[in-house]
Length: 117
Image (cartoon, rainbow, N blue to C red; front, side, top):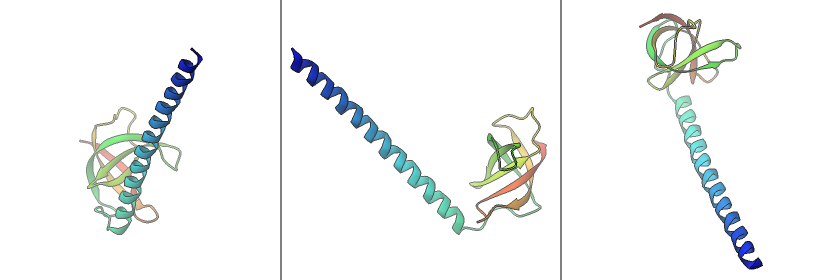
C-alpha cells in the first residue's frame, strides 16, 4: 500500500518538473525574441523624426521614467511614450503626438499628446 503513495508522489513530482521545464523553455524563447527585436531596433534608423506629429493607437499605459502616466504606442513598430494624455483616454484609442526626443540608442522616443483622432 505504501508503494502506491510513493509512486503517486513520484508521478506528481515528475509532472511538476515537466511543467516547470516547459515554462522555463517558453520564457527563454520569449526572452530571446524580445532581445532579438531590441537588437534589430538598435540597428535601424527610427521611422519617426523629431518635431513631427504621428498618429497611432494606444497599446497600454505605464509610468515612464518621469513617474507620470504615459501612453505607449507604436509607429511602424517603433515605441513612442506619450505624455500629457487626458485621463479620459483609454487603451485602443487613436491619438496624434509630437515626437520630442529619442532615448539612448534611439530605440524609442518620448512624445507629447496633440489630440485624439
